[in-house]
Image (tube, rainbow, N blue to C red):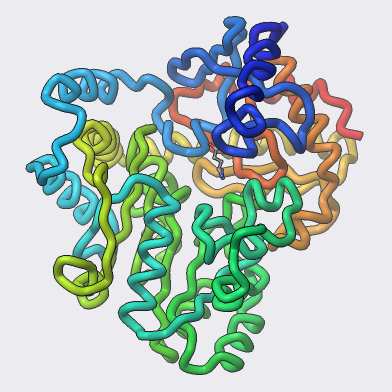
Length: 426
Ligand code: HOZ
């Protein structure tokens, strides 16, 4: 029973657009009433009616060690008493920057912001300011937040709601955003040739998580790196999802590719509103006040956000075995679901890397936005409701990656596989 959620959703729609503060949460594509959450602990979410759910979204990524992780909660409690914001520099910001630099490859300087959107938007402005060029190349179905430049053929909610053109994004801005299919190096080379000397940056999710989970094909990222080197294009890794999740050094380390600029969000804030962008000094020194590329924020480096993120990142740095544990759990879940799908003869593809995974009902490989869109999405929507009704919370869209957290026990995974196996899959 989700009676209270139903009441809350009705009430929410009277004061909040669509009843939610971020569109995918409205369950519009999967149908039904969004479940309103009251609390969470470890791997479990508890809704307004006190129903428990095994959580596979981890707040869309941040809660990598589970919800209400005690050291983070304690640190927030302690620091909240000192003030929730100073609007002046703190030693904590230096400690956070030093910690990130010690974990992430190719990171000389890092600037803290308040969201992944802000991080990507600022990184692109910096790349433009640094190169003196206007255009960027992004990939269909990648999502870099909701800044105007990125809302062209974007993934996540834009794909979920099949929004072809976002009103409010001017043609001028849209024309500076060039799109290529993910995993298609030739298409990128063609765009670069057609726009010779005009492309400031290539921005990519090194492992895509906003059209389900999609892995880069062998040689794809290496090829992009080469194109960027040859054409003096800034290579931006959007590690909002993969940063500190695929490993302490994120996708750069996991896939052995160097980026020029990297953007972060989600895990870096342990559930607080935090983002960051950073990279090589040669580029980062153009940011104000060192340079003239302006970027600022009243709540940037907010002390509560900093202590939450610092506490979590330190834990991840000191216990690298966490990543092996997460990957083993994700494999166990994937293998369990796969064994069942095989026995049923249902066409499927399961994509996964580290603690990111997604299930697609398809008899073709899911390598880009087009192939993801051609999967049986109505069947995924039914699966979503079957899992939800049986206490498992998946992302309410086929276009989102699932994120595992390390509080999940093998008993939780077994229960999940059991619920998955009781679905018709047809
Ligand atoms: N765009 C986010 C996932 N890719 C969803 C954010 C949210 O609804 O919280």
